[in-house]
Length: 287
Image (cartoon, rainbow, N blue to C red; front, side, top):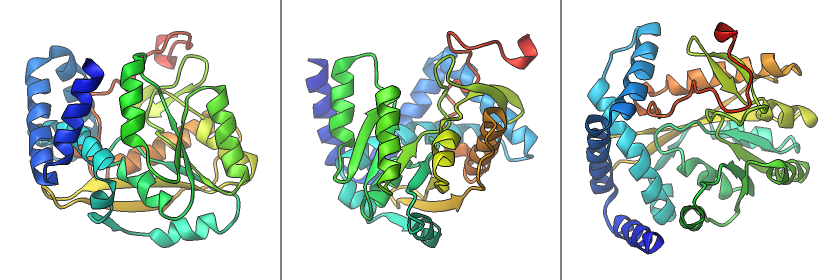
């Protein structure tokens, strides 16, 4: 029943203009912030801290509305990929072309910012992409999400050993792989390194995969434009990662920080980036 209702909702969203969907998402963001103390306890301190560190304007309500649009953008892109592709302005595409021509594949990093779901679809217009994702604990929800995300030339694999193997094979074939680098990995799979000045458990997986065969790594962002006008997609090639996992993860977090600062109010501040996953060692300041 829940699966059917969710699919009906997604189909309803697909029929609406992007501007309406984004306005609805903004309302959802406001309701989530006002209605949930837990949501506020994560959102405001994380966003406010970054604005203070970098001397940026503290645009709380703009960021709250954008958090809801992050969700609604994704749903609309899933159901309207061709329309969405027409609303993307792409900068620095030569960075991507030159990287893929090297023949070692491409590690694509896409933080949860703006219309991030459009990025792999843009790449899939040019070459196959294998995307790593974390399945939900609820099978019915997984089925809906996988169906919504499905797109030609895109292959989604779970965050487990089999998924990593499939990504390694994709790189061997000279294809692209995609990773959401701002997610907290499971205990034992990450290291504690700074993220906006606080220890955050971080995955060294992108560095490990890239260093196997000198694969280029590109950080992508998709900054949301004005209501209904689409997204500005930018690509930035990262310097090679060091072999040391801690140093590599620290370099990765610096790259994520730079990506977030493209549009800090559009980042997923409601996500607990600083949580301590079960099985992970204590962060440095707690030892």
